[in-house]
Length: 342
Image 1: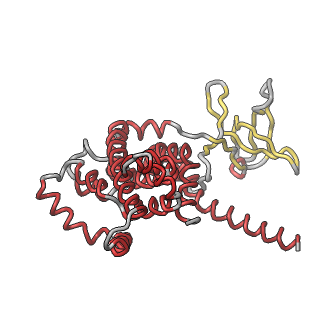
Image 2: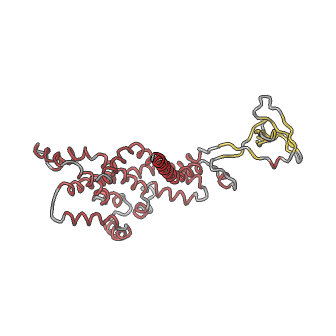
Image 3: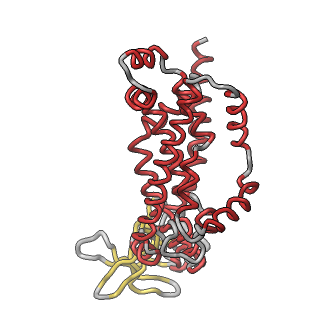
């Protein structure tokens, strides 16, 4: 019985590691590409790591380093000082006196020595070319302000659905949840027409204002969490003279912090990665565009420089990664409590 449980645990652990590897592999690939030169990327025998042929400087000259067979079982890195058709003179690069070694054979058959050579300057080049300071400023403003609106609006609506009874409550909640499966393309043209008539095209308003009217998924997540908070706490606050708003912010909100942080992170990541909406509402306004649209323009200008494109993409991921790692404890706790235990 114990053996079966152990084998089952090993199998589950192996599957988890396999799935994790599949998810993480593109990230490692992106990091590797971002640290390579254009020549390394164009090489037919390129390594997964940013590597280049090893060289050794001797008397002001750069010599190629090869793996020279010393005996049947051992090779050593040596620099080619004199290359000949039937033989070659090598320098022992590890020797203090730089001893020479005569090797008989064709040097072209030898394998080159390689060394890891990351090109960190790719990140600096991408930073300057994309104008990241302005893009970060625009994206943070859009993400932070819209996140505040999304959290506040979802909190108020979720509190109403979780704590109050009113006519048509179930029908309204079903309609609200049904909007989750509504494709955004269905409302795209009516929304654009409305914002155009309001004169909001070319401003941040179409990207920020709609989030102050609630999102069905956020409302559902918070409602599920609030329903798990004992009603006795509300009743005790009511006896002490607290009104609905005071009860929400002083009783419910402190208890619902994990769910609120989860909603905030969900929306922040959505806003940070939002490409289509800023593209159509801020077309022709590069000074207002967020980082996603800026990266798209950068990719068009440097379409042959995949290393720079990957470097710029990784720079754009720094803020979301940092925020997630800081708040991951609350995020996971909020999702589990709202979605699983309820």
